[in-house]
Amino acid sequence: MTEPAQFNTDNAVNDEAVTAFETSAPSPSSDCKGFEVRHLVKQYANADKPVLNDISFKVEHGTVLVVLGPSGSGKSTLLRTIAGLEPIQGGTISINDQVIDEGRPGTEKAGRSNRSSALRTRIGMVFQSYDLFPNKTVLGNITMAPLLVQKRDKAQVEAEALKLLDRVGLADRKDAWPHELSGGQRQRVAICRALILHPEVLLLDEITAALDPEMVREVLDVVLELAKAGQTMLIVTHEMQFARAIADHVILLDGGHIVEESHDAYAFFAHPQTERARQFLHTFEFE
Image (cartoon, rainbow, N blue to C red):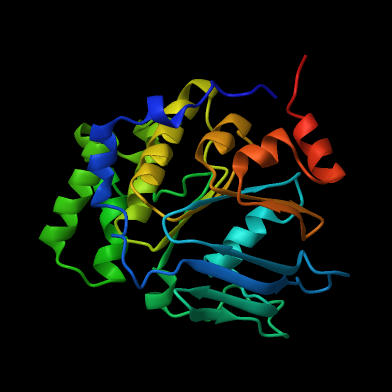
């Protein structure tokens, strides 16, 4: 695995780009207290132990948490439970001190949490495989959820969708079909689709994993712009230079546990405190 190009948030994100995204990210507010997971447990049916066991952390409003860890450590499962795509068997998930999901033993076989649609849309998620609907245009993909789930005005939703597409450089592709787009373009459409729901928290799960190397930067630049604009985010990534550039807060997962946590991203990458973190970071170093 090779490292991506060096990221510098001051150089990669210009003032115009930041301004463009400020209307997409939730406005800072005195009553916004962030996002919190407390003692979360995720157990699958017939598994001998939990995939996630007693996970606790808090993400302050307007900050970025980067979740690192080896394959199989539970990173993607963590994001799926936070998004309400899978039920939890213990602990709580809260936004602004409001519990939006709590663990219920006996739900190991359930397909999704029983979170309401209103609560579900408070958290947006972008997947590594894009998951665009192949039978809908770019504009149709972006506008479907706000129209069907949030029951918003069609003209207003389409106008906002066009603004989002313009901000990610895809205004001229609004009538294109997903198969006509490059991987990087599809991922930028997926980000627009999540943002149009005005999520308080945005989850990004290895969003560059399926991309050719030349397409990675165009997607990561959009995420850097969102961070500068104050969007609260949880990001799972193996792009270490990107993680260094964007993280306010880092956790390292291994075996379903948090083995190291730091609110100083520079210190985490430069001087990890645990042997497991040192071993993990060493796998990305080359002489």
